Length: 316
View 1 (spheres, rainbow, N blue to C red):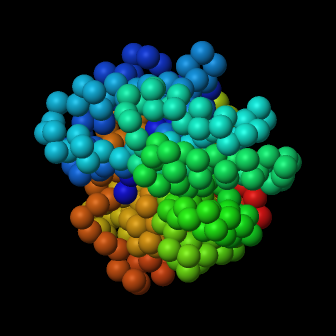
View 2 (view 1 turned 90 degrees about the vertical axis):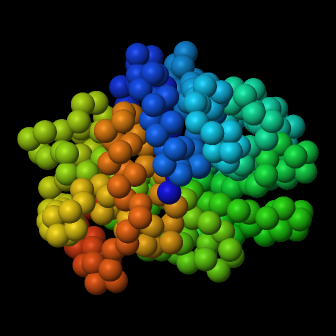
């Protein structure tokens, strides 16, 4: 399991405030001390003047980490580069990578990833972005490369392109959870398995729908509230099974939902904003659902009337 940092710097969706930074350092320290060494971020994380804030915070947290030097050296940062319309050449993507390295205060990324594909709206831009991945890999700026929000057809294309260039495609990120595991996600998962690509599951808790924290009478503020109002009523069969298994196991619903992702062979990267959430998510490790429990959850997931809305940049 890794840790996602979408909320770090995002005021609009997640209510970030700079006063949270001290606790976020504690969250980071706890995660590293517990054995979490993968932190996922992006150069576009952070709203308005806080654009890039997530990377800056991660860089500061690594610098100020008070644990052992061995644990510090074992921290792996995966960042994503936005397919902005002005990034039209491979060198522009390399420049973006170098800017991320400066914010992160490190010399080399564990994984450099494309945040999304432009195939749906600007296919002419796609190869330049792929070429940028090759360039940053060949220049030693990243240990590995990956993509995010690529559907199975486009994922196979980028894999074949990179393979011809001698660059392995190491990871693919997709929205994957008990409320986002339809035919397309399963096709991506099967393709990743056949090509030796690690599948990173983002939004593994369905933006919080699978935590048990929310109901029709208690919705989150902002844009998530409108989304939850549409989807939550149809999740009742799934939430009942999640509640039942969590009680039998002595675990929280979040822990069961994350463990399900792990049982499916993915690397979930739940986001956290505070120590309580971090401690809860870490409780998903060190145990495993039985095959029967996974099947129960699968069946309940198939019964929901409406799953999560997919990312607008998700390709076929």
